[in-house]
Length: 335
Ligand code: NAD
Ligand code: WQD
Image (tube, rainbow, N blue to C red; front, side):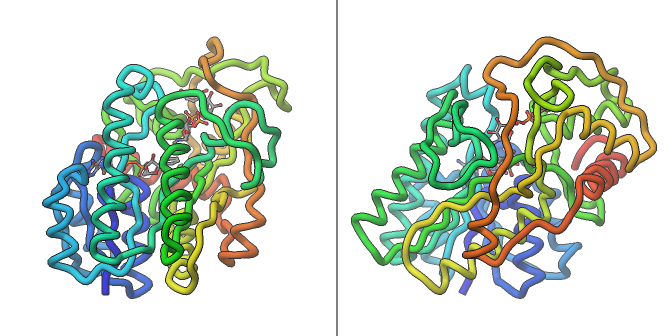
């Protein structure tokens, strides 16, 4: 029996694949490399000493996906495959709705056809919208402010409706906060195409000399130092959360959402300071205007994941900074 990992060649999928293989699971990865590179597969194998099957397919291609289920004994799916850039989603809403929503629908349809009804879905803290006050709990009202976020909220709703229609499903909706860091080996990590949208790859590219300076988007927020506060989570802690979610869906039926975060908010200036202290490398920065759509503060209440999944984060902000830096400095051009 295997776990199918859609988007397993990506940033979070590759780290989760390593943790699953290390824990003794058989995995099958399906990815179209739209935002990843084949080399990551060699690195996963190198880190784990384990072989796994890989399909270079688009999950929108129903026949190819069907073949994956025909050729393997899939027991559950972890569904990472999706487009994830907020800014790009505003410019290209059709692509985002098509890829993320239609991809998830086709996946659910093919799963049901093969009587595979266990899934862990990559949702996001973005579903909490602009109006809730942190720490954020899973039961808060949800809303979104951009097409990317709307795809996550709509897919959550689709899975809720699937469960209502068929109580044999077992579904975990994981709402990630801000994943950063890399595997401590420095062999796998985040490898964004072009200019990074997220802060940590931007910081590491400044530190490695690829970019001049970091722009900090605003210092007049109502936070302890005026810069935005977020719940940064080490990608390996996040990957381990998926293992716990898989264990949960194997044993029970139902649908539940879980926050995967540390429960601690750090500002952009805290992050820069911790990065400099952890690595000994200076990060020059300027303060620029606020980025439209950003909120002052966003951090999780991770109590439900602790209670129901037995999961909590272990790594510190300094670990995250050290590991991001090790990955970037050892792989200056990415994979
Ligand atoms: P990523 O882009 O590194 O990984 C996604 C992978 O999916 C890529 O390898 C890409 O090639 C693949 N993919 C995309 N569309 C596909 C398709 N139609 N068919 C097959 N493969 C496809 O992103 P990530 O950071 O690893 O994120 C993984 C998931 O977690 C995404 O769904 C993302 O929206 C969600 N998420 C990410 C973050 C974050 O900050 N990184 C936060 C919250 C949620
Ligand atoms: C973090 C902080 C910025 C870049 C996004 C998505 C969210 C989720 C995670 C997928 C903020 C500041 C950033 C820079 C900066 N992804 N910043 N200079 O916006 O919290 O969340 O990624 O689901 O949906 O919206 O993450 O890393 O972009 O920003 O000052 O060059 O860093 O203003 O306070 P964000 P981020």
